[in-house]
Length: 169
Image (cartoon, rainbow, N blue to C red; front, side, top):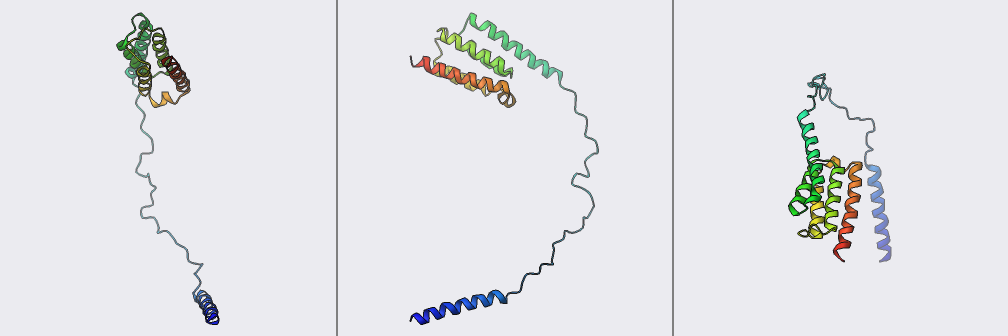
């Protein structure tokens, strides 16, 4: 019985080796060639040689941004006189719309200062934190990822810690 098993394994091995050598080797000299180009043009051959001139910068948009920043700074300056829920929301939103990280940071600091002095009784710590975070996302992606945006993120993290510490006392 063992002889039959060994003989069949050896025979099966010989058949596998015979099939391996019996196969025709692949022709190494064949190469795949691309068909010749039909039109002989590049991918962007129809594109004009010169790019059209860009339109001049929209001056009204630049002045609108400067007006928004000036309005936000005016709201930040007038905020300590009468801080309440509506003026806080309006100030933070204007600062976020100015798309300037430093202006938004000033607004956050003014709101936090008013909250710590107990002038914002109608805003809880979690409401204020949610407001800071939601208005932060109004800033453009470029502003949030800039160097000033990094400083703003660190300031918001410290504000968050301050709110949590004062909230639990």
